[in-house]
Length: 310
Image (cartoon, rainbow, N blue to C red; front, side, top):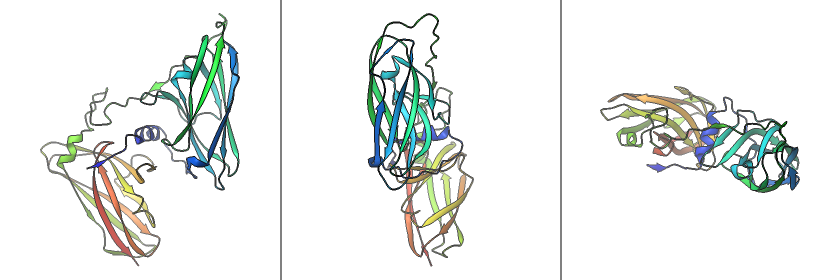
């Protein structure tokens, strides 16, 4: 079993909510510089701007994936709007205690992208929290903000609700979800047997097929969550398609160095599931690496595959 990364939970959840992939540029967090422009003190019920300036010190475009606003600061304010707007519904991440604004915007090389939040003071007090400025869903630079709010909200001012969609993270590690979905079961891994088939030699530029055979050796159904193909195998090789297809656009998991293909397939007791990858080698040489077949976000079995391109 390969222990998977708890950190990618947020990445997986947010990506599940985005129907189309955005081509990422550089995601190197070391190239990101962040400053915040905001008043230190405001009156309750009055709107004000918080401007987040995300700078890119590199010579390649940098992706601004999201800005996550932490609950401690949101206890005293309400966010009215953002410019640019979030490209998906705002959602609250309970394990991170923040509200995520998904941006997927490009910061130009040696340039700056500014994001303006229109905010209103909701109650008196001093409120300090972080704004996480993220280049991927799991690589973020936290920047603190403190706002002193005085007075009370006038009776003729209506505050935004401050309520956001709460992500249900139960069931992601083999536990039953609130909807009763028991498919993610870590014990399924003991019943799973994985073998692979790939030609020992392939030709550069021509399509070939890598087939994974997933066998359920148990007396009950098992659930296949995803198949993650590691970067070393993909260094000079491309995956054109999968059959069955990934249920969402494949996404890269930087902390795990792999591309994740979402399967969500059930294998009946004693049955097999074949997953075929159409591949193309872009260079001559040995192409080798690992593939993780996962029954939950954190429970996977790993196999190694290799072929020679000529």
